[in-house]
Amino acid sequence: MSIPKALQMVLTDRIISDLQTKMIFINKIPQQKLTQLFFDMCDSGITRYIKSEQEKTPELNGSTIMKKYYQFHKSRKSDP
Image 1 (cartoon, rainbow, N blue to C red):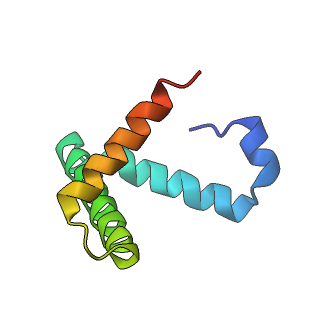
Image 2: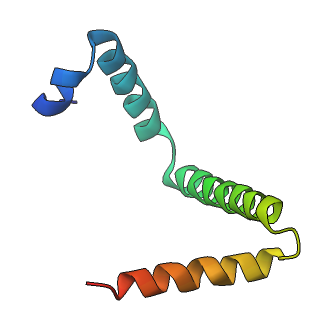
């Protein structure tokens, strides 16, 4: 498995070796488990985001926070 030249220039041999080892293990994991891991990480990120927003404004519930989040990002996509 080759590492792009630009990436090799900024990484040490040890980091490149660790990265290659991780990539080998990831390639051995069945796709179903990788998909589940991805969704678990997304759920965890959403939960952390809601908790941090509730610390700022405790009166908001999770669904209101997520509605505002999606509205904000939807409006940003329409900006040129």
